[in-house]
Length: 270
Ligand code: RUB
Image (cartoon, rainbow, N blue to C red; front, side, top):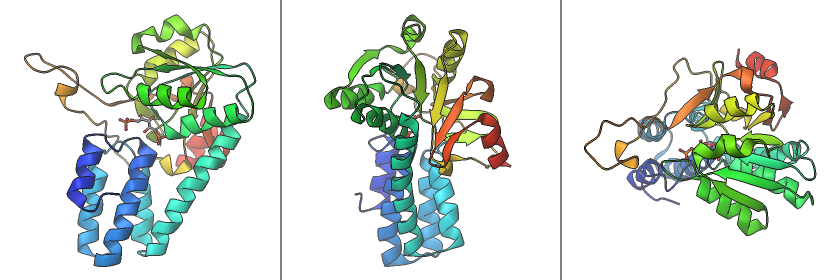
């Protein structure tokens, strides 16, 4: 765990710590230590705001901070940590039910929650195969592919532009999310094209996410990252990190409360 705020912020910015859930867990663990020493006053607020701004699209940390602001106690932080861990286990169990024996799955980026569902299905003895996209420019798909391969799951790493090439062999698409919003599902850039290709080929597109990812913030912020992640210099470059998949492409959202329809989710967001 990072001892000082600057170190943690740097780790999150450089993506040593990444993925919505992990960012929230590490920030909460840091704040628990911080508040034990410094309490929940102005300094806490400053640290919380700084952490929240580091990867602004992911909403789970924001939602956790709102709960801490309502009840400024170490126990609130402990409860949130326990809750997040319990939710992932619950999501894995519920989600694995949609994966049938013999299924081929396509996934994007590295989502702990999506990976938890896939691993659970494998642990239950289902024979599965996974296509994991590289996820340019930071290649987080490598983490997914290595993790699943290490576990013994038949996993094929593909480049992002090969989605359409392989979708025909796929039974189901499963991705994570950074924020579940009225506009749709916010997740790693490239999720929306995957959903469109899935729909074109009539493959169900599932999203996995804790209900702490329901995003009621007014403004949708899409983080734009350093262009140097794409290419060194000398060219005009844009590097948005996330996109928004409209609800019409989403079959269901696997949450710790159940496998919900887009309609259920939109009601919860009100
Ligand atoms: C990660 C990403 C993940 C979500 C959900 O983006 O888009 O799909 O954060 O992950 P980045 P989790 O690598 O830029 O952080 O299920 O682990 O919360």
